[in-house]
Image (cartoon, rainbow, N blue to C red):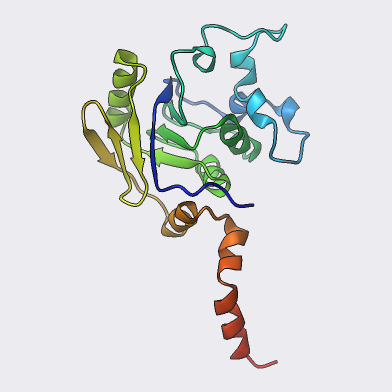
Length: 198
């Protein structure tokens, strides 16, 4: 399944300055029965977003109309817990294309990269600068420059670089998943196969 190409994203962001957000909080286990990557965004942070009667909790950031955008800024150790890929599906399906944190659980990070969500890991100090900027001005824009691996807080022009696996970076820039990557190499694979004995 192909995803939107990711080169440079300029967007406002939702701040979630909570540490150790695990995958069961991102998408509770009772919503894992579906096998298609659709509809999970409705239940992203379900227990934090809604009361038992289904009414939205007005104090939760995703329900606050002053925040919007395609970037989620999370606290340290984001995506810990079980390895469920549905957590990344929920983040993508809600509309996020980037999650910023000072530390990601490895499996969640890789699951995000596999579905078109860019996990940007920066220092704790820079993450706090982003939180402070959004608190001061909720419509603060952030630029995620994947080709140059740099994140910038627009109002202050402060920036920091981030690391990403080269293969995953190429896939994100081209909007590929692993299968798309192989299909894009069809000609090379066929030419190589001609050199192999049967």
